[in-house]
Length: 117
Image 1 (cartoon, helix red, strand yellow):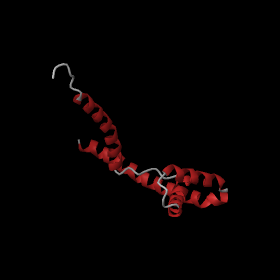
Image 2 (cartoon, one colour):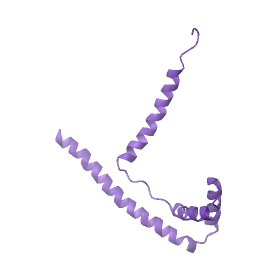
Image 3 (cartoon, rainbow, N blue to C red):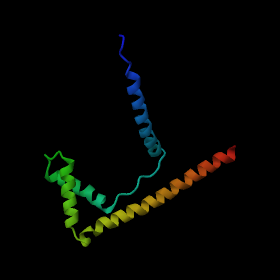
Image 4 (cartoon, helix red, strand yellow):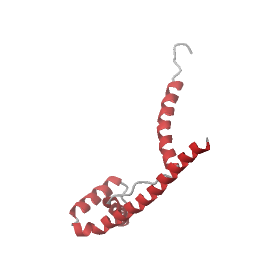
């Protein structure tokens, strides 16, 4: 057909650019890099989500769960939040140990590559 530009190449370029960014994220995760630990609120949220879903099985909205969790978290006293803060601190300590081990492996691995040359 005359006069029509081939737009398939244009769309493919966009897909390639978008795919490259996600591939980098996957490569970092695939390399064994530890994930950051959750905050006290997210530790609370994981327990609250299970409880909320059990009480409201017909709820399909993530926003409703998040709003209810946020309201309950703000209403809680520091004493009520203490167990979640402790769990979050423990997860942070575990993360720091894991990250230190990971960083040592990465550093030693890159150093060994230079020695082999």
